[in-house]
Length: 170
Image (cartoon, rainbow, N blue to C red):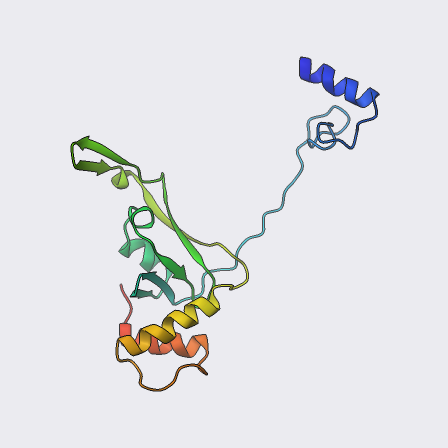
């Protein structure tokens, strides 16, 4: 009731453009209408998918392979980086989020059995392409995949060499 009176006072005072005006809140002439916000959808995830935990790189053919191989507790328990084949950064998340609970002393439990794992692209443009290429350039010699310089190789060539050496999981 007080909010309505305050809004009416604001209209009378000519404050239509202020933050507290009905127009700025998505209302029009007293009728309740919501502003429509268009969400920008990320493009589909391009295989192969790379999930890196430190220098432990795992390669997957599809998002479904990632979701069946990794468990819901993984994103909240490990520091990881994930990329698709275009160099787009990916995010893994559990729904509902995994929560650890102390049972007795040093004994813990969690609700991971109630959660499902999901994966999504968190960007439209592949801003992680340089990071992925740099990571692969350092990783390939570590696993004896190549003795040749890799500076001039494209991300697709680096991924092909890496998946040939590391193989796909699932």
